[in-house]
Length: 290
Image 1: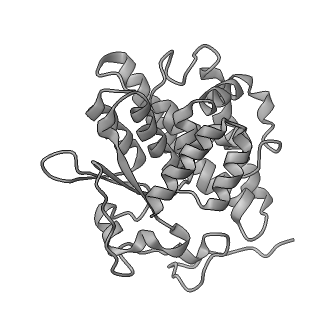
Image 2: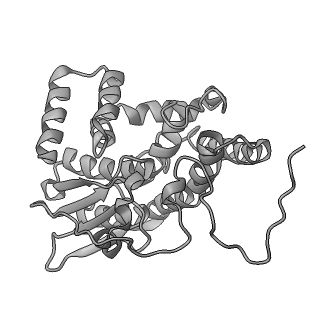
């Protein structure tokens, strides 16, 4: 039997909580050091990392470029959250919440900061008139699912993912609690996709771009290594959709942005795609790092 924890009357921060990201968790906001952000030549400056939240935005930018929107050219700058880059003064000016991704839009008369992935996706969709209906019930349905993702994903990442994959020890109660909720969410998506090609209907939208990096990655086995544990094959409609989105060239490119070279090597090996695309992608990333 484990010891029972009794919360104090007032919580104080006196020790790290353990787990993979313990060194960067803290109960206060604001910068920890002065560091300016780099700025490139393209209209959009993206400061991010290829976590599921980061992938949402790089997929959107790559989809815009794939669709012929040359004005969506961007510079991608790596923010190493394990090193605390998100607490630099320049990053905090763009996103006071110190979370990736953060975007600076230099395409207008004055720079505009955009943070929170739903805000970034809607900002880009409205700017280019793409992947989001302009008005009516179709737009509302996309927004329904976009904000479903924003409200649901913390249970997947901060809840299930943390206790299943990152916590310093396994807690049965916590894992059971969040597994139950995640399987409910997978069931919600599976039922929605039973009669729809994409999340919000028959058109590919920012709702798919927001949901796929989290839930698509989980069922395809690339996030938390939990596919078998969650019995993902019992969600056939969700599996169909996840594989369909994974085949999109812009999604494949978007997944590669702001990754370490070790992660890139694994991803290129997994994709089994044409050698010319791999060479083009590698050359592009090398030029961005230079």
